[in-house]
Length: 206
Ligand SMILES: [Zn+2]
Image (cartoon, rainbow, N blue to C red; front, side):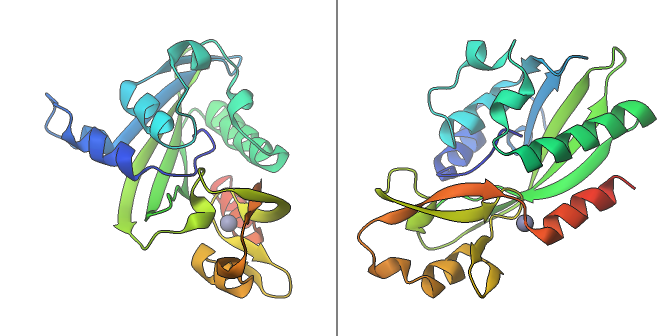
């Protein structure tokens, strides 16, 4: 994946209405390849549209293809997990899969990422949209909302938010606990990995 957050509802709507010639739900799968040096060699249009409608409206093929995958993965911990998964897929010559959340301000999404080896030591990344459900608007996940110079920690994989004294909470519960509804400006989000997601990803390596 690219780090995947923010307002994606629109993307899904557009993807699902585009004309298609294949019978199986093409709008639910997003694919890119990296070569043996982890440079993006290919990304499909579904993936590009999804990325444009979520985290990076300015993204186009020249900004992706030819660039190392690490430019698009935000935190050191997430990079490490990706490295472990990619090493395993290459070493064992079989796919590894992990689940992650890719929420927007008005929806929750569960995605499944599969990393599969290619014959030339490259890898195919396929993200499959497992489930999507609407929810009331959450300003914290809206990239257009104004922000204060205050930071909160969000898990890149499950999108839960860390609240001091409470632990990792779903974003609505975190907003309530931190009384974000009463503040003029929302905090900025920094990305991390919570302990259960870290353990889950490590389990995929066993
Ligand atoms: Zn998590």
